[in-house]
Length: 318
Length: 285
Image 1 (cartoon, each protein chain N blue to C red):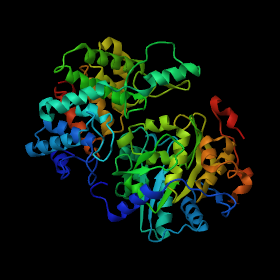
Image 2 (cartoon, chains in turn green, cyan):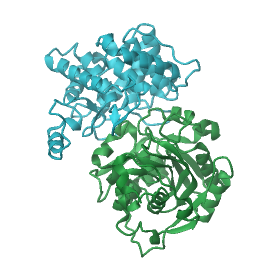
Image 3 (cartoon, one colour):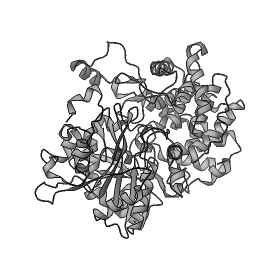
Image 4 (cartoon, each protein chain N blue to C red):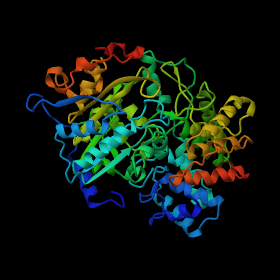
């Protein structure tokens, strides 16, 4: 344990060491996961839309500590690489309005070193008042070692940032993008940004050697108190997650079950979720089936639009 | 953040955090000490910093990124940039020994054999051996640049062909990774058939590590670095470019707007870059 850590953080980190490992939910013994697909635009009504989503999903954060985890990758504000800053601000306001005791924004980018520079260039300082005071750079946060019980990957343990470990609710706010190694990067893959570059480097290449898909499944299990809102207003297709092209979809996809959220996003992108290895690993053979996910608001077929795929991933087309 | 602000961020244990209020890490501690050696430092602060570094030195000879992490990593190379006598001879030489034993996992016999067996084998050519961030992972541009710089310093104390040979192999790794645009990405120059873009920080670090190369071999890289400096969006990136270009006799000032320093490492780097522009490039001393 590190110096400067609060008792609450220490307790949360200890809990993580002891038991925050793989979830063993079995489809059929639980109510079907609900996933919302709502139309959205950055220029109109985004804040209301996000707030309604949180209310509809009965996200109870009263008195809780919420950590928002956007996907912040590159400097260029003109591209669709990063989660839109308004999306992050809307979530911040939404969780505050629901009575959260604290809402922080936290990210640990994979290759850029000074995350605040990245956030500045990506428009986060301009959009989110007091951004610097609300933000934790997960790459250089204090860390605790978390043991992974029965991991999919070759890792037996991972150092995670205490800010993430101490969260009562970790909210994944990714961009809807294709990915040149794993097919699609959505709410589960976004948790790669929880791994501290300060320990593993820039990029966190250890995770690649331990198995990217396997690590995604492991991290999903290590942080079971989560919620996801995927920014699909404008996604990225082709050679994502950095060098792809903008893909307007005009939706947000949200829910408490990240596997179900990601499977739904895949269907919107006309990608077979069963062909995404990390989803298959985490969810098992049947849980991703459409009939095992309760879609609310828009129907998939009404918003579905095929994302361009690089040649290596043509086989995952739905 | 000037040198006194950096000194003020020193933790009670003697190390430095990346940012105010954090625990001590090896990387910001090294950079805070380096910055204090080119500007008026505080003797007591420096002593405590070195003491902290010695206290976290691992038995295998390397340094962990922070005390609580049970693994030596790439930060061992930046510890190797510190003056040997201030760090301690034994500490310094064991860091260099640790570095000499590290290479990217992609060059391991087991990995190469597996690649051959599944038909992904390279041409039989000797692999380029750089350094990884973390043992067991592949080599990348940044840790390779720091590995070379640390060995160049060690070369003054430890004569012998092995160090020089490792420096040369490291340089070959960097030359092999030049992107089509002339600079350096973090990793490969081409991924899945698509050219990767170069970045200011990695381009600056690579140029710094290639300080002994003839400028004629680096003409495009030097031009690219100067262009990157004008468009740079981070103080960290600009500082590395200034340090790398200064190593080849080129001084750049960067974009017109001031780039903020936000943490210990980029603040210390800005101090080191200014010193280099004034003629003292600490990485090459």
